[in-house]
Length: 332
Image 1 (cartoon, rainbow, N blue to C red):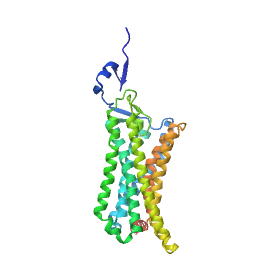
Image 2: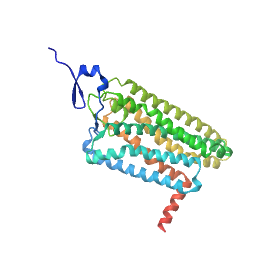
Image 3: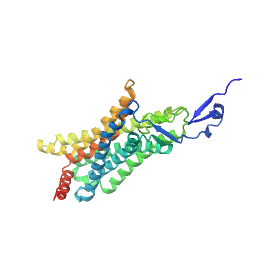
C-alpha cells in the first residue's frame, strides 16, 4: 500500500489529499522567526551600534524639525509643510524596523506574530511610496516658487497643500494594500523562518508553498510605476526650474535661486540612490552574499531619515537660524 504524502504546515502534519481537497482549512502561521543577518550573527551587537546611532539621529533631527516649523510662524508655508510630512514619514519608516531589529540583535528576540509581520510589511511599503510622493510635491512647490513666484501663494494655498498631502497618503495606502493581503492568502508549508531583519514582502511570500507570481509581479510593477512616474515628474520640474535659473541676469541671482533648491535635490539623491542601488543588487546581484543584500536594505531605510534633517538644517537658512537661536537661548 502506497504511503500517503504529507505536507508540513507550521509544525503540524496534514495529509496532502486533505490539503488539496480543502485549502480553505489552511491557517496562517502564528509566528515568523526573523533570523537577522544570516552569516553575521556573531556581529549582531556590533552592527547594532551604527544602526542605533542612525536611528537616534533620525529621531532627534526629525522631531526637532517638526518642533521648529510648529513654533516658528515664519515657516508656516508650503515648503515647510511638505518638509513636516517628510519628517513624519521618515519617523514612521525608521521606527517600523529599528525597534524590532535591535531586539533581535540585543536580546535574540526573533519571533514576530503573523499579523505584526504583515503590518510591518504594509507600513514599510506604504510609507516608502508616500515619501516618494512627498518629493514630487516638494518639486512642484519649488517649480511654482521659481517659475511663477507671483502666483505661488495663490496656487499653493493651505487647502491645496492639504489635498496634495491626502493624495500622497491615499496613493501610498492603496497601492501597498494588496501586498499584505496577497501574503495573507498564501498557504505557508515550508518554513516560518525569514532570512531578514524585518518582514520584507518578497522574503515573506517566498516561504509560501503556492504560486507567488502575482505577488512578485504586483510588487515589482508598483515599484517601477511609482519610481518612474515620480522621478519623471521631478525631472520635468527641475528641467523647467533650471531653465528659469539660467535665464536670470546675474550669477549672484542664479546662485541664490539655485540655493533654494539645493536641500531638496540633496534629499532626493539620498532617497533614490540607495533605492536604485538596493533594487539593482537584488535583481542582478545573483552572486552577492545575502548578508550584504540585507545590510543594503536596512541602510536604504535608515540613512535617508537620518540625513534629511541634517541636510535641511544645514541648507535652509531659516531652520538653521532658528536652531541656533534655540541653542543660544538655552546657553544663556
